[in-house]
Length: 393
Image 1 (tube, rainbow, N blue to C red):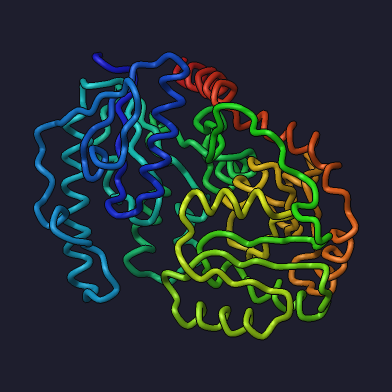
Image 2: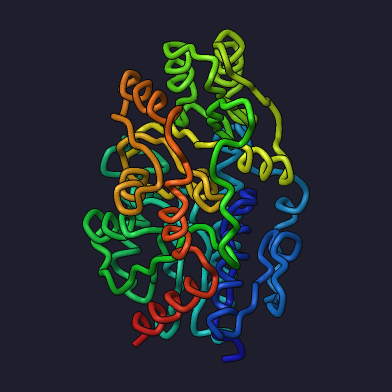
């Protein structure tokens, strides 16, 4: 085989998943594997990794994927289904075409947009890998009415159980346990690597960020209902103290009604700053560096998933305030990197915010440093290599 690993992404339009592909390619190269990226959709444009070549299989991408965003709420269900079938057939041909190119193939993210008949293209002598974000994807059918995604989910569930040469990469031990218990995946087929990595530990920027003595708390990222920003706004309204400042930075891309609701609530709540737009990288870094805590109010979901905002906060040396649900509960209890409040209890959040006002945040420096060890590129690469070798043997 020419390459130890060939990587691709099966999602057409979600650019964050191409970043995941870049991270995995970087980790595999650091671990000493030879790696190539197959140009399927946007890999050539979005996935530039030093010393990792791109390969073409000579299977032409359907022209409709090159012209425009193919999935849209503006399209009819029938039209979206047509695009889905075209994409799935194309990806099936890609997987077939990779036979003999590498003995290890990464197929991208496991979601309800993953081709339901992907697995029928598998070669028995090849190991396949997918990025499994949450166990609720292959178990979605258990709690849903019969419909298109019911059948997709059930096919994924059966395929994961049947094809033992499929390995799932998950971002933490909680998700690995859920796949083992809820989906019936053997532990040897579940590899763990964090969602983000860093080349080295950053210098800690912990402690009151300004001379005015105010506690600065921050939410940063995409605004959507599952983030429950209104919950923290209610706590801020109840506290109503001038020595705490809450900044909400990010735009609402999917639910305009929810975005308008948050903007109105923020405008009517004392000591709240609303930055309603895309946050460029430099400003993103500055906002994180300037805050004292990152506050998270996420709703409880059907299964655990990694939380990018939590990781970004802690990798910037910032402690978190979060509900006592996973993954926050697991990380705070294990590493002591912030405060937990009782999920859904606004009084509990108010009490934690009051406590945070008088907290010396330098006490979190060493604890966050220990947490960051799990994300250092070299450490993650060595761990992943060991897991891959054990999984293959």
